Length: 484
Picture 1 (cartoon, rainbow, N blue to C red):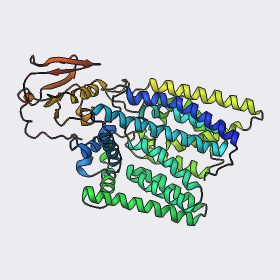
Picture 2 (picture 1 turned 180 degrees about the vertical axis):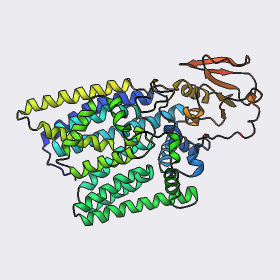
Picture 3 (picture 1 turned 90 degrees about the horizontal axis):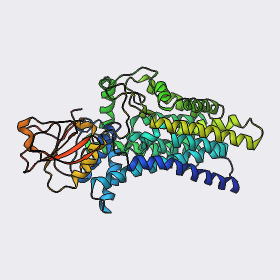
Picture 4 (picture 1 turned 45 degrees about the vertical axis):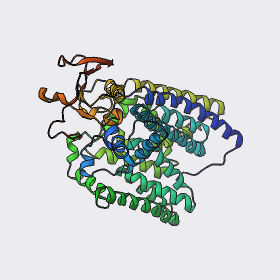
């Protein structure tokens, strides 16, 4: 596994300068996405995490089927709940401020993963490898799109890379910590168990039997604690894990879409272009130095290729390790160039071209390029539905709101109570005789509303309307739930 090289003070100073430069460049699009783009790429970024955290902290929110059936662990929403509670304690009392806190935190997590990738690559193969790691990690198009969104996949990536780094060295404390991190990551996303188990297998294959025991002990403790959390929240230990496996093994996930084995390869190409071939070449070259870790990365990808329901974000937990290994492989390949200055500038040119290509590709993304050939296929995922979410921010700060109707977009494709942050009913389209249950209405600009509604504000293609008067009771059977 990963083995450190001795650092020299001057080289270490140069690495820190390089890291500062690349992290600054990587931070700009991530913070822009966190603060400016308030659209949704996929409903899970709201309803599988931060919306449930909002329910824990503030007592209200929309519930998807997973959190009615008990098919998700509360670990990830629990992490976000701590963050939202902290924000509330320090005076962040609006939906706007709480969302920006969460998205900025996720952007910082992404940047920490890039720094860790650069650090490991530098220790293995020097400054050239760190350059590639910063360029790839900083500007991979899918990472730019997803980095600031609250998803368990994006949180998992840096944590699993840290796990690999800690497990590579000796020492009881490091191995216990690595295992504990693994146990935690399993409950963030159960597929992370493939990586956690794979690292254990590598430790055993290296005949580090005592290290394997420490690692397994750490993973076992956190794994059991996660199972006990299921007991507290769902009434039975490991209930969410069993429910999740049951749902997938009976192939119910097919209703969310089944895609061919080649799905991930096609999306990697359509989302990143030729730059992804450079990344792949580096990964294959690094197999000469780190065959076990490269095999783990490839096995993780192949398992996901074999599972019928696919989304490219499912590969993001392995992406930081993959990019780190690729960077080491490219640096090793360039080491064959004898002239040091020439070698460095070849690397700078290659890394710069790849970063620029992937960054530009991020601006050209569509749902189809991300693997979703639906009615959204040729539309950009950037700013999607943003008008609704910004109007929900605005409405949440309005004192007289007692109910809001949201049309022109499915209720599962908006920011929910995370953005609204007001304990008032939120309805999809209502029958005319039920519309008195709301005194505000968010609709597309081309929708025709009853004459009693007057325009208040427009953001992008969505308009906020208001009528005079109070609200009638919610229609019978209304619940703050998603139908899926």
